[in-house]
Length: 499
Image (cartoon, rainbow, N blue to C red):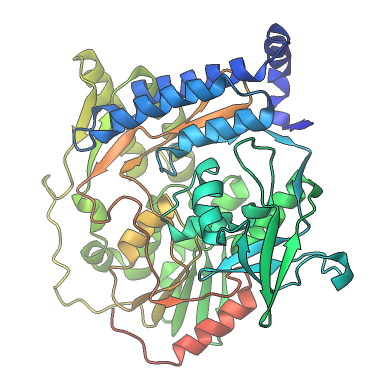
């Protein structure tokens, strides 16, 4: 049974007609139509097919598309449909190229517990804390293996390929560890039958009994097991007596209230300068516009100091895929967002308006791409970071991340970690590819949407899908704010490496 989100109610009539047209076996045709649309969008709007520095991209697209069409013929359920689309998108290992389902099952199955990956060890998270007689592994025991395979092998080879992650990236192995024990009905996932656990030096084999659990409850449990329940609101508060804690869970404010809170936080930077310690809490931060981070750096450090250290974006060259769909996206979607968040005279708005106009001219000239030179190569002088200007921020700045830091969060990390007296703590971030400015496309079935990048960032210092690794790592529950606070206070009392 599927639960349809409110945003899809208008699509129900069309979806019912489509299902009726394929009454014998609707899922295969639906999967094929959506796969074909994904391939079309990538071919027409993604910069990869025209990226001379990434020749394997075309081969990957062609081969994956062929395999996806073949697999579509065997799709006979929503779970199989969903698994196929996520597998197809996941082949590109790009957190900007993703499929998102607009519907969800009412229930999925689990054996009564999940696991958390803490520094490569998988610990049982047992929310119901059953009695020993219930036959489940005890809370906190270590998972050794399932059906002869290590838990790391399960996550890398069986879970991540259908969750649109990157097996080599630790953040994704942390995030998707709980999904070893969640069965969505994917016919390609042979769920564990028997697992071995260690509890205080005693090993025990448990034959798993799978049972239904509400889907949303399962997802929330998996999120908590992955990275804990970190706070989700913007704001600042006193920390450690003379320090400051800044919560920045996103660079994508969704409501007017969030937008107001983010503006207040960003514009208050001068008040942060005299604090003995600042914690920049980026837990949960996955998306948005990195310009918010630049505004915060300029507010905290002053324009002159920030211009000398925030240098990564200045030598980036951008190459845009020219297509009618991308021009429409920039003019009628992204520009509106930039106008709402930053205003008509802001750099994000005027820059994108200029790009959209240039893309229109390039399209008339028959060009497939538009390349923008870097700021360094244009007429603006880049200040020398070696020039001695006093740091206006008095205390150490701890940048706290969990494994969800991606997209705009990573571009903020590109800049802030170049500033003096800044220390990265917490867990490794995710990584990303050179492709960005993703747009969202509704797929023909109405069941899913597809996110597709539209530009390339060239001359970037950080390599594709390479994360930021903290100088000091926290391997407990990264969502346990009191525990993280105590840990950072302890760090503050210890000698720190020079940044």
